[in-house]
Amino acid sequence: MLNLLRKDFIALKSSLWMGLMFLTVFSAVFIPKHSSSVHLVGIYTAFATLSHATMIDVKNQNHNFLVTLPISRKNIVQAKYMMSIIISLVSVLASYGIHMFATSVFPVLNKPELTVMDIIGPAAIVLALASIYLPLFYSLSKKGTSIINGVFFILLLALAQPTAMFMNMINENRLHSDPTLYLILIGIILLFIVSYYIAAVLFTKKEL
Amino acid sequence: MNVIEIRNLTKTYPEFTVDQVSLDVKQGYITGLIGPNGVGKSTLIKMMLGMIRPDSGSVKILGCKMPAQEVDIKQRIGIVSDDCFYYEHLTIRDMKKMIAPFYKKWDEQKFNRYLEQFELSPKKKIEQLSKGMKVKFALAVALSHEAELLIMDEPTSGLDPVFRREMLDLLADMMQNERNSIIFSTHITTDLDRIADYIAFINRGKLVFNEAKDTLFERYAIVKGDSELLDSDIRNKFIGIRETTVGFEGLVDNRQEAEDLFGNYALLDKPTLEDIMYFTAKGGRIHA
Image 1 (cartoon, chains in turn blue, purple):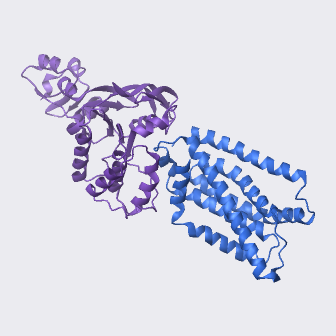
Image 2: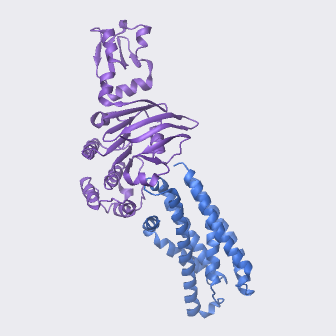
Image 3: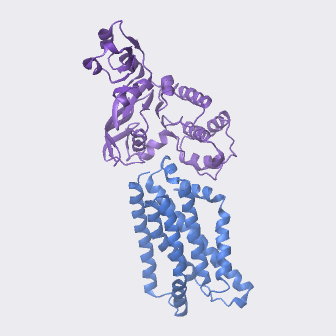
């Protein structure tokens, strides 16, 4: 598992600037205009980085290389799911950090007060998206994955407003301790686990 | 002892079928897997490596079952293919950093020695390597983790003659250790004429034979003679026959019988692997 994560970091090493670029661009776009920018910057950066990482794999027909190494296909899938958790946490925390910095340096931005839910919420949304995206990545061909990346990008644009509204509703109505919210979070974790098992089965059966 | 034991392996595609192939690869020898393009050699190798799931049949490598013991098997084998899928944007050094930790018996010094021998700079990006250089890199990786079995799928198809010879010498070196074995799929049969001990011939998805190369050359013969020596019964003795206006050339699989049949009236030659492959694949009568 560690070797596979290491592999992903080596593969991404030369394009780490892409993650920083996503963070900078989305921050510049959302922070001045959007009250829910802390969520959107995190979600967009995380998903763009995840799909960039999978595109590097697809472009290099990485699965054909990985199956020659002494690792099981299950482990390959496990590592990618772990990678998606790391990417979402780092992106969401980076967005949180940028917003803390922005609100202290530019109080005129008039950003809402940051809470733990501003980290957990976007991270959960990214994991929910990854739960749908990753099984498709493991079952589709090179062309299919490119199409799925495009579809998800459009989906993300369409979901920006509802996400902002949902997160604002939580903040405004002070629903942070509402049990429904915790049920949703548990539901997302379960979805993520089920998604892993589906992706593992699909990839184990996939012919390369 | 067999390093590979394949039993009744079957895979059906709309275009062709690998049909009930059973094959043993002996430890301590080089086995050449030959056959024309598209007859199922690569499919068979992919099934051995778990890249393609067979419809039925079983594969055992180094005494372990595929795919149940896939990880243990892959620690002990090296894979070299003409389709080397590495990260194009990375350097050889980065790729090595990526690959080496997966192997328990990785030998860094050996790897560096092979890079030097193959004139591969660790700073060079994979995308800058020619097909031949990629095969060299794959070979360096395969030979640096003490692989007991090398599985090579068309490794020489993109190589210049100089490196092809060099590679064959390297493989011969590897075979100094009697524990090591190689299965080498190719349609360039001259490579196998040089180094193979056993030849397995696949045609139209079926195993035609798997025999020691020397036995094969003793058993098969190329018969050349005048057309008047042929009649329909004699033609049926040939696996494949090529007839011209002045004579014929054909392959028989029983040299002794051919000697008895033609005596001094025809010329009997030792066939090359290419002859065996050509006449078997074509079959019947060929008019030139």
